[in-house]
Length: 366
Image 1: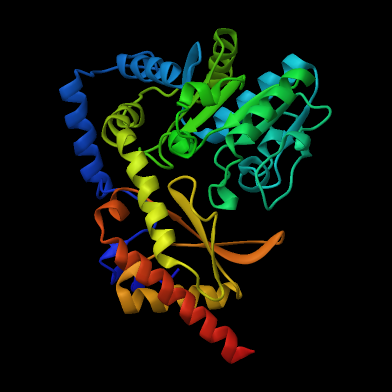
Image 2 (image 1 turned 60 degrees about the horizontal axis):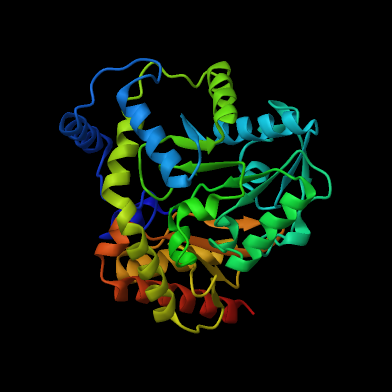
């Protein structure tokens, strides 16, 4: 990443996506929120802030109970372990782009003794016939990050749930970025979307911008056992500060803005339009995320991003995804407060400049 070029930009769309400032500024905001909400001292995740957050999330996701975890990696490993143990089957169904398969150092195998079973195709969301014939549990990621936040259509999701139910297969939702799902499936709230999943995970930092933490929601017995594994794995922190009250704060501040984030993502994609050597996936965006894919190698793509930053003073993103299964570099753009507050034409121009520079480099080298 060209840090010096990034520092010269007055519009930075890289992570983090919101406007909380540096860590000291965030701590001051969380402290002010705690005072305003009457949240005081607590120990070992037993205080008012944890109780309030877990109850709010259980209601929002339509589940009987919820438990806070310090990380999503811990939460999802626990969910997989519990469901597979209950089924008496250590096989875990994962899409090839699953976070567990790509980014967690095979923790589900080494920590929990589970055997991953690949299901579905890298380039698209899950379908009913992708579900494994035999598994203790299957994870469904909604939205699917490494396809730019792509989703199945509503009828396909309903069919996935029905097929799993008929087969006696437990479904868990990897809902790290689930906050935008009601915007993708208009008329369906989070509780309806989560219905049919035995458990649901969501991150508080990925789209809402909290300082960390995750939620795991499900049935009462499931949550009781999840709390036990939370303690066994060292997740029962002595203090919930600052992550839990910060999660409450960003829910209050940003949850209602998510539809605006999604609308801005669609506006930007539409403004970019057709451009040789550049593809937006999916198009139009289904959530507040999109991948800008360039038909070139990673080095050329990074040089094109840097050239666009120098020309427009817009930093579009920090990293191009580049996997063996999908060799075309993809720049992930997530819309948060900074992008929402900016002139969308500046972002559109930066993407178009990046695409033009990459295309010119490819034609010259060819």
